[in-house]
Image (cartoon, rainbow, N blue to C red):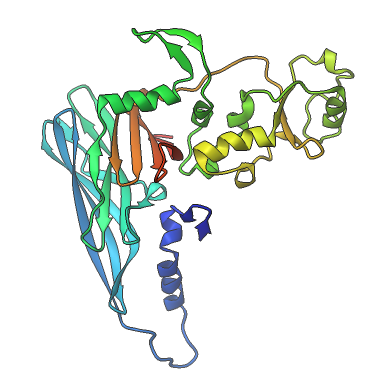
Length: 331
């Protein structure tokens, strides 16, 4: 499946031709037909040494390829395992392939496969993530650990607050980017739109005419309120154009790509409406990160030994990036 940015990043989609071939093989023909071409399937592995604060573990991903008409094709991502190399108290043997976060690398036959694993550095089990690259051509994407200066630059854009040199909040300067952290999702097209827009900046005050139109919507919860001035909470109007400006720049999507059914919408004003009386900010302050090809993986520790991972796609020829996913282990 092709999108505006090219082929979809879902591993289940970019291996769809192979899946369809396997489905076709499962049918029993009514007559003998010539084979379309001989094929050979092979299970292979790819290993990456993941390091955290001087500790190292080898992560091995098993996958199946098929050679068809002289060309290798990825059929499936099968399993992952971890092995303690040095520095860890313990490392769980079983690891998890985060299939829905797998991406194309620098080429059509290179795949970036995030793997989560559990390790103990002496204070209890924690979840970590690393990216294992599979290359069917032997060519691999350039990879490097982000410097503290690079992490600080990313965090400055994502931080919704203005801080002094000691890190204390001295003012609020809501960054549009931060609204993407209101929910977790394996693909930006699956973000929770209702959470995303709940504290989104207003596009001007709603009018009495809009208030009357809202009362005609089936899902408007304040039908009993006669006048807008009697509303127990303020009405916030968000034009589609203002929302799409943020979604397109930072996510490469628009409202048409999202499930917006949970938010009140008036077609005649081309706007969505929310009704919160409070205020909230969303944070993602990266503690570590790496760049693999055109993708950046930013990571931070969260509660109960879990980890949150923000995946960004660098936009070639620019200083911009777009969100691919905002994922959290244990969710």
